[in-house]
Length: 222
Image (cartoon, rainbow, N blue to C red):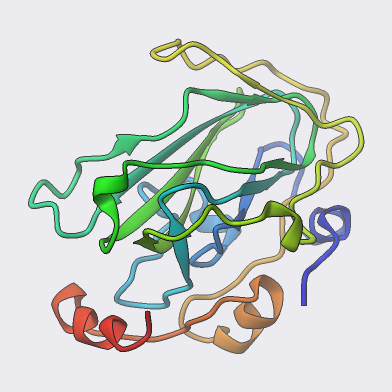
Protein backbone atom coordinates (compact mmCIF):
# COMPACT_ATOMS: atom_id res chain seq x y z
CA UNK A 1 0.00 0.00 0.00
CA UNK A 2 1.35 3.42 -0.94
CA UNK A 3 0.46 6.36 1.26
CA UNK A 4 -0.62 9.77 0.06
CA UNK A 5 2.38 12.01 0.86
CA UNK A 6 0.24 14.74 2.41
CA UNK A 7 -1.55 12.24 4.66
CA UNK A 8 1.83 10.78 5.55
CA UNK A 9 3.20 14.06 6.89
CA UNK A 10 0.04 15.63 8.28
CA UNK A 11 -1.24 15.16 11.82
CA UNK A 12 1.17 12.45 12.96
CA UNK A 13 2.29 13.61 16.35
CA UNK A 14 5.53 15.58 15.98
CA UNK A 15 6.39 19.18 16.80
CA UNK A 16 6.89 21.64 13.98
CA UNK A 17 10.12 23.22 15.19
CA UNK A 18 12.35 20.82 13.21
CA UNK A 19 12.45 19.55 9.63
CA UNK A 20 12.19 15.87 8.78
CA UNK A 21 12.18 13.83 5.61
CA UNK A 22 11.25 10.33 4.50
CA UNK A 23 12.90 8.48 1.63
CA UNK A 24 10.15 6.94 -0.53
CA UNK A 25 12.14 5.67 -3.54
CA UNK A 26 14.27 3.69 -3.22
CA UNK A 27 12.52 2.20 -0.19
CA UNK A 28 13.67 3.49 3.19
CA UNK A 29 15.24 1.19 5.77
CA UNK A 30 12.83 2.72 8.28
CA UNK A 31 11.96 5.90 10.09
CA UNK A 32 11.96 7.02 13.73
CA UNK A 33 11.66 10.72 14.51
CA UNK A 34 13.94 10.68 17.56
CA UNK A 35 16.73 9.12 15.50
CA UNK A 36 16.36 11.25 12.36
CA UNK A 37 19.43 13.39 13.14
CA UNK A 38 21.79 10.43 13.60
CA UNK A 39 24.35 9.78 10.88
CA UNK A 40 24.59 7.91 8.63
CA UNK A 41 21.12 6.28 8.57
CA UNK A 42 19.07 7.50 11.55
CA UNK A 43 20.37 4.60 13.65
CA UNK A 44 19.08 2.02 11.15
CA UNK A 45 21.50 -0.48 9.68
CA UNK A 46 21.45 -3.71 7.75
CA UNK A 47 22.02 -5.83 10.86
CA UNK A 48 18.55 -4.83 12.08
CA UNK A 49 15.93 -4.35 9.38
CA UNK A 50 16.61 -4.21 5.66
CA UNK A 51 14.30 -2.74 3.09
CA UNK A 52 16.00 -3.21 -0.23
CA UNK A 53 15.63 -2.28 -3.87
CA UNK A 54 16.95 -3.61 -7.17
CA UNK A 55 18.42 -0.39 -8.55
CA UNK A 56 19.20 -0.14 -12.26
CA UNK A 57 22.54 1.53 -12.90
CA UNK A 58 20.89 3.06 -15.97
CA UNK A 59 18.36 4.95 -13.89
CA UNK A 60 16.01 4.61 -10.91
CA UNK A 61 13.66 7.28 -9.48
CA UNK A 62 14.33 9.25 -6.32
CA UNK A 63 11.26 10.25 -4.30
CA UNK A 64 11.45 12.00 -0.96
CA UNK A 65 8.85 13.58 1.32
CA UNK A 66 9.84 16.58 3.44
CA UNK A 67 7.92 18.29 6.23
CA UNK A 68 9.60 21.64 5.49
CA UNK A 69 10.26 23.86 2.50
CA UNK A 70 13.65 25.12 1.35
CA UNK A 71 15.66 22.07 2.27
CA UNK A 72 18.77 20.88 0.46
CA UNK A 73 19.22 17.18 -0.24
CA UNK A 74 22.56 15.44 -0.65
CA UNK A 75 22.29 12.01 -2.31
CA UNK A 76 25.18 9.56 -1.85
CA UNK A 77 25.96 5.85 -1.97
CA UNK A 78 28.49 3.70 -0.15
CA UNK A 79 29.44 0.37 -1.70
CA UNK A 80 29.25 -2.32 0.97
CA UNK A 81 32.33 -4.11 -0.35
CA UNK A 82 34.38 -0.93 0.02
CA UNK A 83 37.00 -1.31 2.73
CA UNK A 84 36.71 2.40 3.53
CA UNK A 85 33.55 2.36 5.65
CA UNK A 86 32.95 6.09 5.41
CA UNK A 87 33.62 6.42 1.67
CA UNK A 88 30.47 7.84 0.10
CA UNK A 89 30.04 8.71 -3.58
CA UNK A 90 27.78 11.69 -4.27
CA UNK A 91 25.53 10.80 -7.23
CA UNK A 92 23.65 14.09 -7.65
CA UNK A 93 24.58 17.74 -7.19
CA UNK A 94 22.91 19.43 -4.20
CA UNK A 95 19.14 19.46 -4.72
CA UNK A 96 17.00 22.25 -3.24
CA UNK A 97 13.32 21.48 -2.57
CA UNK A 98 11.16 24.59 -2.66
CA UNK A 99 8.07 23.45 -0.73
CA UNK A 100 7.10 20.74 1.75
CA UNK A 101 5.51 17.61 0.33
CA UNK A 102 6.90 15.00 -2.06
CA UNK A 103 9.52 15.57 -4.75
CA UNK A 104 10.39 12.95 -7.38
CA UNK A 105 13.36 12.86 -9.75
CA UNK A 106 12.30 10.34 -12.45
CA UNK A 107 15.72 8.84 -13.14
CA UNK A 108 19.06 8.86 -11.33
CA UNK A 109 21.71 6.74 -13.10
CA UNK A 110 24.92 5.68 -11.39
CA UNK A 111 28.32 4.28 -12.38
CA UNK A 112 27.72 1.18 -14.52
CA UNK A 113 30.75 -0.46 -12.93
CA UNK A 114 28.70 -0.78 -9.74
CA UNK A 115 26.38 -3.38 -11.28
CA UNK A 116 26.15 -6.47 -9.09
CA UNK A 117 27.14 -4.66 -5.90
CA UNK A 118 25.22 -3.96 -2.73
CA UNK A 119 25.23 -0.39 -1.47
CA UNK A 120 23.94 1.91 1.23
CA UNK A 121 21.94 4.69 -0.46
CA UNK A 122 21.84 7.83 1.70
CA UNK A 123 19.78 11.01 1.45
CA UNK A 124 20.75 13.87 3.79
CA UNK A 125 18.33 16.76 4.33
CA UNK A 126 19.78 20.11 5.42
CA UNK A 127 17.49 22.77 6.84
CA UNK A 128 18.06 25.77 9.10
CA UNK A 129 16.51 23.82 11.98
CA UNK A 130 18.48 20.56 11.65
CA UNK A 131 20.14 17.92 9.46
CA UNK A 132 18.40 14.55 9.08
CA UNK A 133 19.30 11.24 7.45
CA UNK A 134 17.50 8.47 5.58
CA UNK A 135 18.93 5.38 3.90
CA UNK A 136 18.01 2.49 1.66
CA UNK A 137 19.74 -0.79 0.92
CA UNK A 138 20.14 -1.25 -2.84
CA UNK A 139 21.45 -3.91 -5.18
CA UNK A 140 22.79 -2.33 -8.36
CA UNK A 141 21.73 -4.23 -11.48
CA UNK A 142 22.52 -3.71 -15.16
CA UNK A 143 18.97 -3.62 -16.50
CA UNK A 144 17.03 -1.00 -18.49
CA UNK A 145 16.25 2.21 -16.62
CA UNK A 146 13.22 1.85 -14.38
CA UNK A 147 10.02 3.54 -15.58
CA UNK A 148 9.19 6.13 -12.92
CA UNK A 149 5.54 6.20 -14.01
CA UNK A 150 5.13 2.70 -12.56
CA UNK A 151 5.34 4.21 -9.04
CA UNK A 152 2.34 6.17 -7.77
CA UNK A 153 4.59 7.96 -5.29
CA UNK A 154 6.75 9.43 -8.07
CA UNK A 155 4.65 12.57 -8.42
CA UNK A 156 5.51 16.05 -7.19
CA UNK A 157 3.12 17.55 -4.68
CA UNK A 158 1.42 20.67 -6.07
CA UNK A 159 3.78 23.61 -5.68
CA UNK A 160 6.87 21.47 -5.11
CA UNK A 161 9.91 22.02 -7.32
CA UNK A 162 13.48 20.83 -7.18
CA UNK A 163 16.50 22.85 -8.29
CA UNK A 164 19.97 21.40 -8.75
CA UNK A 165 22.89 23.50 -7.54
CA UNK A 166 26.38 23.39 -9.01
CA UNK A 167 28.58 20.50 -7.97
CA UNK A 168 30.51 21.48 -4.86
CA UNK A 169 28.08 24.25 -3.94
CA UNK A 170 27.81 25.28 -0.32
CA UNK A 171 24.73 23.74 1.31
CA UNK A 172 22.24 26.56 1.81
CA UNK A 173 19.57 26.47 4.50
CA UNK A 174 16.81 29.04 4.73
CA UNK A 175 14.46 29.35 7.73
CA UNK A 176 10.79 28.75 6.91
CA UNK A 177 7.56 29.56 8.78
CA UNK A 178 6.58 27.27 11.63
CA UNK A 179 3.31 26.35 9.92
CA UNK A 180 4.68 23.29 8.13
CA UNK A 181 3.06 19.93 8.94
CA UNK A 182 4.67 17.55 11.45
CA UNK A 183 7.03 14.66 10.79
CA UNK A 184 6.21 11.33 9.15
CA UNK A 185 4.98 8.36 11.14
CA UNK A 186 7.62 6.35 12.95
CA UNK A 187 8.76 2.86 11.98
CA UNK A 188 10.60 0.86 14.62
CA UNK A 189 13.43 -1.30 13.26
CA UNK A 190 12.80 -4.40 15.36
CA UNK A 191 9.11 -4.41 16.25
CA UNK A 192 7.39 -3.07 13.18
CA UNK A 193 8.50 -5.16 10.22
CA UNK A 194 4.93 -5.70 9.05
CA UNK A 195 4.02 -2.05 9.62
CA UNK A 196 7.10 -1.03 7.65
CA UNK A 197 6.17 -3.40 4.86
CA UNK A 198 2.67 -1.97 4.64
CA UNK A 199 3.87 1.64 4.60
CA UNK A 200 6.83 1.42 2.25
CA UNK A 201 6.17 -1.73 0.20
CA UNK A 202 9.66 -3.29 0.54
CA UNK A 203 10.71 -6.50 -1.10
CA UNK A 204 12.61 -7.67 1.96
CA UNK A 205 12.55 -7.38 5.74
CA UNK A 206 15.30 -9.57 7.20
CA UNK A 207 17.32 -9.53 10.40
CA UNK A 208 20.93 -10.71 10.09
CA UNK A 209 23.96 -10.58 12.38
CA UNK A 210 26.34 -8.79 10.01
CA UNK A 211 27.11 -7.93 6.42
CA UNK A 212 29.19 -11.06 5.98
CA UNK A 213 26.26 -13.22 6.99
CA UNK A 214 23.96 -11.21 4.77
CA UNK A 215 25.64 -11.68 1.41
CA UNK A 216 24.78 -15.37 0.80
CA UNK A 217 21.14 -14.66 1.68
CA UNK A 218 20.90 -11.78 -0.74
CA UNK A 219 22.52 -13.77 -3.51
CA UNK A 220 19.47 -16.04 -3.52
CA UNK A 221 17.01 -13.14 -3.58
CA UNK A 222 18.25 -11.02 -6.45
